[in-house]
Image 1: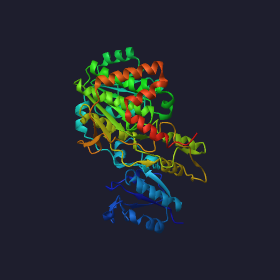
Image 2: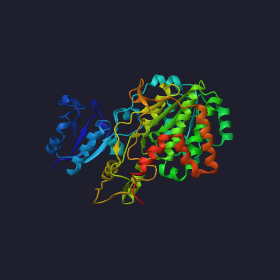
Image 3: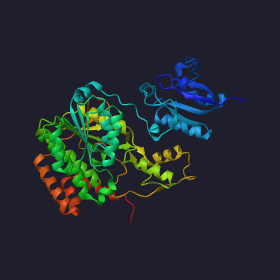
Image 4: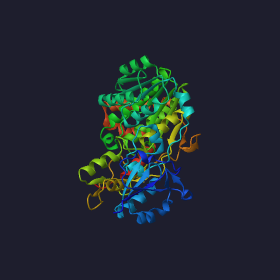
Length: 476
């Protein structure tokens, strides 16, 4: 009886995977390269049989039952097409670690199932390590919202640049506990300081800032769920607007060198309370650039794959429960990037940005949410419409069909990094904005039902976008 064959697609660079270490292989191993010109070459004594275009002819000839794709060897689009054809032929597809991952010693050679981020894969981020190291090395860094998806990954990434101390600020006890344990396993020791604190607690935050005197603040703490903020506008104002103002003001008071705030594409032509609050926070941070030597930078980007605020965990749970998978609208689209990519680019933006700039991350092409749901269902080995249904529920208050990374009032300027651009806009008047935020804070405490009307006065684009969005929602 002929042994089943495994076909391995190498990376574009043709870097070898050490098959001698892959004890689980009992089948015949074949090799295919993503580029045509390497046919006939041998790696570890095994010939490269052809290019990607030859895949299915070779699969038929050798009776291939499984295809292993070296991570980052194919684009997300090519991998999706490969999986669709493999599914029809009852051929399984799994992913091997990249050569760089194997060299790091942090992963085994064991293949894994294809994950959703493999299908949405973007080009790996190339960082200017020298500029980041010059900025971070030997400095005290403070990360607010450190237990969140982005905040925790920023902490992981920052450790490699040898900060003198990394101060983690978050009110989530469990999140801080597990993050500290993880960072200690990664080699952090006396350079990590965990602080349980609510950033709205001025007395507590002043004590932390006085003790540690950070050179750089990464402000990643904020609420993120649009529908919930629509029904809790007072909490949105306090957690997003007031907290951002306090953190930025403290950066001046405690003589920080840099302040980097995380923002969202929902701040552009906002239709939601959350997006409008983020836009007000952006404007305030930008307005401070003329008042202080501290470098104030805002980094704006879209959805982060598998973060606590994304649809991926929701879809995953719905699939586990047998469905249905709920999508608000068949044409809803969102920008996506992975948590590590977003965090790396936030740090890079902080290193190269100028005070007062709002920096946008290159998010690539937007993805239809229904396509994302379909991919996740099929990756689970199920079929849409047969094993599990997709239901359309209609846009919820505050939601948009499409997100934008910059408004028509913002011109686009390049930076020295190809994946980071500037949304150029004249800063708002600080004193006028400060008075508006004072009024919003007062409403948040005493009359939250009036916040939407006040936000519409502060942001005319919020009123216009909100009126347009209402027309798209289903009738009650």
